[in-house]
Length: 70
Image (cartoon, rainbow, N blue to C red; front, side, top):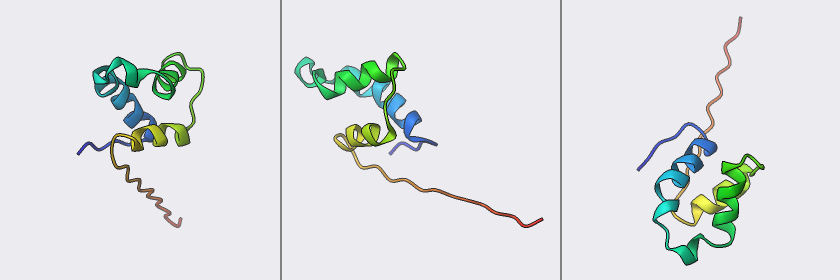
């Protein structure tokens, strides 16, 4: 299990550690397009990142909001 502080950080890890190990035929299509969009900063939504990550594992997100009265 890996723990990250954001979807972007998780996706960056996936691109560096999982994507390179994929067979060439798997890298075609949506995975290659996502790699290009992220790498060349063309824009990729968190929704799209999550969909790709979900193809390879389970994603669990927690949001913690702290409010302290003055």
